[in-house]
Image (cartoon, rainbow, N blue to C red; front, side, top):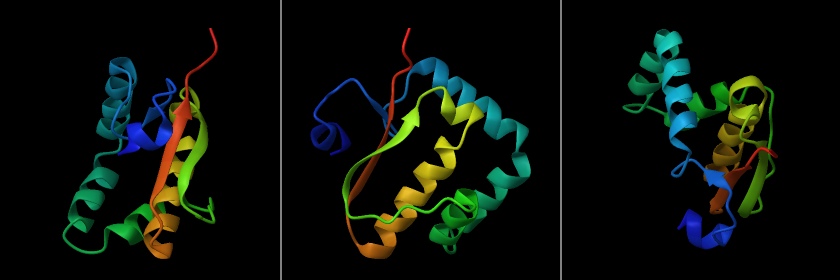
Length: 107
């Protein structure tokens, strides 16, 4: 569904990341074992609250549809992860389908 809504424009989203980026995300998760454990535990409870906690102060007023959350490089060293989490929280709260994505880095 994400691919269809984003039009196959060469952008990245939660369900389609470059292999190197997925490896970096897994490495980052491994460094934050306590937070990952908390996230997994919350899956049994209220995952939206956990997403909101991961979003921190980032807020996205969701109206649905595609949402640019920055460049791929900002996922590891910027606020892209918080923006992605905030986008999904906004979507869940409003009932709108939201499709956050990341643009490829310029070479």
